[in-house]
Length: 287
Image 1 (tube, rainbow, N blue to C red):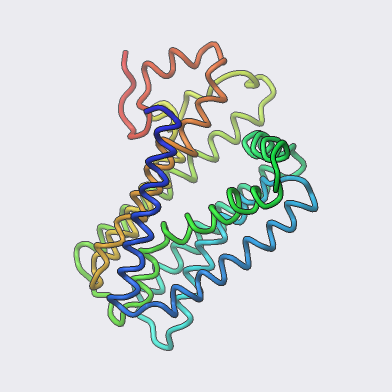
Image 2: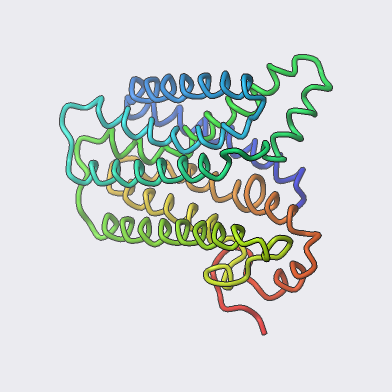
């Protein structure tokens, strides 16, 4: 799929997701929960926007990305006076994942130059009128809105009076653990590989990266489908499918795989690695 077409489809999916979100608010009367989460995420994004302007590095928004889900989880959870053990476990899942991702990105980017994605966007905006407004709307506000859409299953779980235990609950928990381990191990293996000077200019092809070109992205998408499976235990939870669907589409066609592979396309061994290794879902390499 061409990148321009993928962006157009991504916007369409986001618009349809917002429509479904509005339907959830109206049908299940969760407006105050959604409103509080929007306020929390937007306050966070404004703070990081100010930091980005001060440092002239918009990479900071990636740190805010992980925190946005933690904000949604804790805001919707603590607005209720009573909780179930299952809701507390889901909150722990979201908190562990969000803080792990935020800290990983923060440590990785410390002392480094701005991510070339945001450098390109910032310089592109500076050539137009209202450069600051463009940065605010298209980087920070868009990331905040996207996080709120993806986090819809968390909201439905925390806003529900009861979260029963069924086979879907255990399956969702197992899927989340599986996805989380793939993301964490994939990130760790890549970090160790890049930290070795002799690996500069080479492609990571060992460990989990032998079975998929993007184990970290696969793991992230998988764990959010796990949370969705848990959300199926609550009334109306099935409607939140748009959250993990949007994330998976973005990782596959917009902000994940395409940008990562664009950075690797000039590496000599990438062509051969691409031919023999699955793009996303892990599978045995072709001989």
